Length: 480
Image 1 (tube, rainbow, N blue to C red):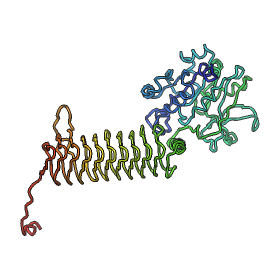
Image 2: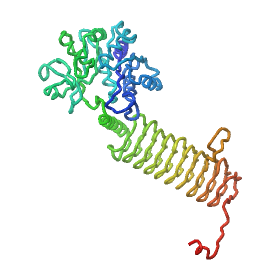
Image 3: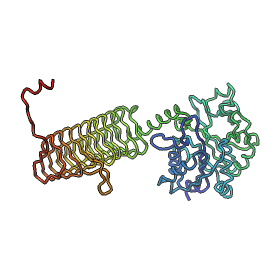
Image 4: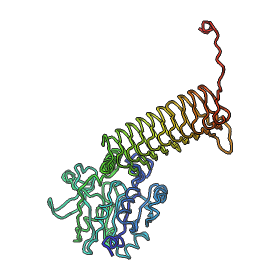
């Protein structure tokens, strides 16, 4: 059996996810606040899965427990993991949360197996799989716990690690609100990540009290108790403080988002993606970008967006759950949601692709064009100032300026409130035309400018649907 499998079978991982996070000023449970397009709890569980997919995971829930459980259960990846939810009735601190876990069937099972327990806070969305893997290295039986520490440039808000002298053994951890001025000057902090012998953790939880500034049971108090009881405490020092940024308020959320986004940008840049300005593009962790793509400043890529080789996204583009084909050009200010853009298509500037829009290869969607539930064929042009909704548009179609599909007239047809327009291949629509759906324009038809089409047009026909012009000499003077 490999070392990794040995560790996997002997460690349980506990995530403390019960807090409300009042300082976030959000009604959402803290662990459901998003960074880089995913809730905190998703980031942590994905890192756990990558490090140890077979480990039994306990998630302590409290505030908004149903929401947290639904958010985890709704993700396909997490259904493959061994996850138990443990209820903490009152949020009385990390020590109380751990007590709830160790008294649950999940905790009792680990004690019976003499497993170790890795404890992770639920508000560290940047925690990398490598940290989890290294923290879970086999813990010697003579060692009560392993404690992760890190030097922070600004340690405000974190528990300080107090040692015997500068490099001596640890004495205790002092929380920010309980620290004196000398202790607050310490830059080595405890990141609330521990690996415990399960039996030691169970026994130690009976030692701690809530006689402190917050009236809570601190898991950090176990460290001091262990030292006083002559138990061995091992220090594991992590070098990157960015990985351990806790999120307790909107400012820290913005900082965490910045750190996470820079990691994402660096990753794709190393894969051959060109970012004109690495500091202004924002990319969700679930986005995929192929080599040779060019991303200009102030581009936002969200959700399951896919950008293929050679595509260019100009400034201000916002894409959500959208696929961009090879060599496509998405011009400035374009917004697309749940849409597909074909290879070498040219979209924008300032186009708006609403959900279920599909743009064919080499097609032009020009400035101030809006699509909604529209499938546009290849080599088609909708150059500017048009709305195409609930429509099927064929190949090599030319749609002039100011075209509108009138897709709703108050009627319900076949259970549908919005009606479809079908425009077949090689149709030419002049400027300022409208189609009143449901309607079909046959292949090769020609629609004269200014026409309002209310009936089907047969293939190769010329349709003219407008009032005859009447000129009245001298009448303008009467109007004036």
